[in-house]
Length: 410
Ligand SMILES: *Cc1c(COP(=O)(O)O)cnc(C)c1O
Image (tube, rainbow, N blue to C red; front, side, top):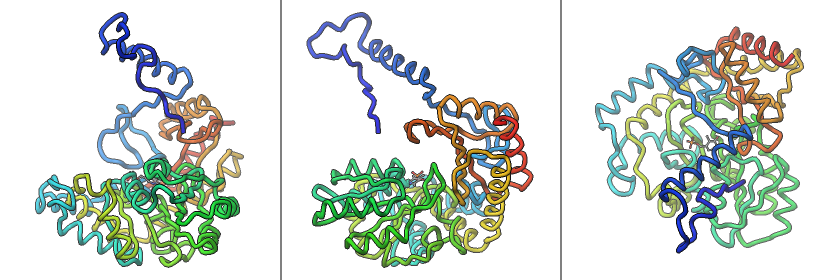
């Protein structure tokens, strides 16, 4: 992780003459220089403007595209039942929650959703957080601190790595998906308490963590395992219970589960699920839970509707996996540089940031929207197109994407 210096490097020594222009002007000129450097390296991040709802054919920057880059894997973000649940929620609860959960913001809607998420994940209890980023900060820093060994996959989501830094635990990153390396690191430093943390389905690579092997290491070393299933929940497993269902792993071997609601659930927010003592300690200690405004209760109502659809409409998962299979067959036939992934995340590795940006722009010119992912989100030399599918896509949409890619990359 690179931490860029943001403040002016030479002009801010106390007592030194301020040079030309006001301090505000100096700050802006320094920041502009930093932005120019990023632009020259093809690393400047820009935002595209979406009009209307998230859908497979969204209106972006003034035109309609066929898009393959949202995390709305089940096509629920604009589902009419979820929209009306949110509207009823606003009618019954208002818009703002008005306070944190511990002060006066914990509503009946939150509690009902927590109970339903606990039942869905087969655990005693669940705790809602405002975002997945905050759930990870809150859970890791409540469970690990100075003197704790924290073991994370190198490619874990930024929120898990940031959580490691914030917790002040001794952070050790094992090689991606390498349970043997994890075991070596754990055996090298037999500290009193340790925690292993991994993504279940890696967000930029689409591959699965070797969870059964990680469970074996965790059991061997007597160390709890925390799994963030942001991309697997709703998508993986016969009934959408996620990557743990896919691997048939029970709560006793993965006691700490994080799920997010902004992806397959199509709404917003996140949760941690586990035993009652785990949830209770998070309520006591998670600063990102305690010191923040509760999620709007209407969003909890929307998510309850979404959870019902996830459970009752298994065709969404089946169709999604069919789309993925069609893409993978076509990509293989066309010799496209796709990674080995059986999930709705299908990265196409292009190497340089420039190559990824160029192909992304060429696709846009053909009406196809796929965003380029560049360092530091992925390692240097690993810039890519991150293609994702949604149950809202048709098989013909996959063919259109394959046609576009093959004529550009030929
Ligand atoms: C998206 C994501 C998060 C963050 O969730 P938000 O609700 O978007 O903050 C956390 N972990 C993983 C693995 C993710 O992909």
